[in-house]
Structures are given as C-alpha cells and as structure tokens.
Length: 218
Image (cartoon, rainbow, N blue to C red; front, side, top):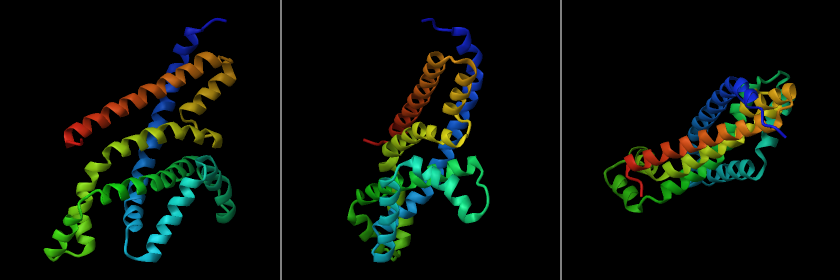
C-alpha cells in the first residue's frame, strides 16, 4: 500500500474551496439558528402557555429527529408541497439553520434562566415592561453566558454540515467524494478531508476561547 502525496497536493485546492463552502453554510446556518433560537428560547420561558407549548413542540421535534431526515424533508418533500424545486444551497442552510435553532433555543433558555431573578425585578421596578427588561437587561447579560455552548454548537454544525452532501451540494465532504470517484484515492482524500475538518474545528475552538477571555467568561 502506498500513499500518493501528489494526489493530495493536486486535490488540495479543490478541497479548500469545499472547506470554504462548508464554513459559509455553517456560518449562515448558525446566524439563522441564533435568530430563531433567541425568540424560541424566550418563548420557551414565556408566561403565555400556547406560546410556550409551540416552542416546546418545535424544540422536541427538531432535536428528536435526525438532521439527515430534515434535509430530505426540505429538499425532497417540500417541493411536492410547493410544486417547485428547492435550490440545494437554500435547502442546506434552511435545514441546518432550523435544526440549529432548536439547540440554540435551549442554550439561550439556560443562559437567560442563569441570570439572577433580581435583574428582572429591578427592570420592572424602573417601569420597564417584561419585553423591555428582557431586551435591554436580561438578554445582553445572557449572551456572555452562552458563548461557550454557542461555540460548541458551531463546531457540531460544522461537522454535521457534511450531511448536505447527500443532496449533491459540493461542500468539503462532497468534493472529497467526487475526487475519489475520479482517482480512487480513498486513503489520501479522506485523510485530507479529516485533517481539514480538524484544522477548522481547532481554529473555531481557539476563537471561542479568545472570546471567552475577552468577555470574562468563567
């Protein structure tokens, strides 16, 4: 058995392009997930029972079903309802973003509930409504608490984004599959793909550690 270094060098530019697409999918999906997760997380602790119930259903369904199935639902099942083809990129970020939103909702819920109850009472005593207190006092403080788990969610989604390769979207994993189909260099390409993922996840871990230090997270 031999290791073809030339194959690795020749394939590296294509894999790097795929890695860039993977980061793009992950970043957009996490941004979408943060918007969804913030509102769902707040709804999860709302005093309005129907709103709290809807948030619980959303979280339980998305966390209780595989991301792969959710990708299939959006890419294959949704076009049946809409009678229109869904773009693979849109399907990828939608599925990953909605899935991430369920996990981030629980992250925000925990971060908000970690804030002392006195903060809410102080805001209400100043004449702020519940919504205003959450917006100006509670949520800004909660963001510092959720930096570490948000970093973990970003890393987890970065790796899970490889699942979008099943709908033919050419991110890092799919690029590797296509190169292997042409060259039969499974060992060289999959090892290269694994190392690129490792570099990306370690880089994100270092960035999160830096943000934790800057924000004084203990």
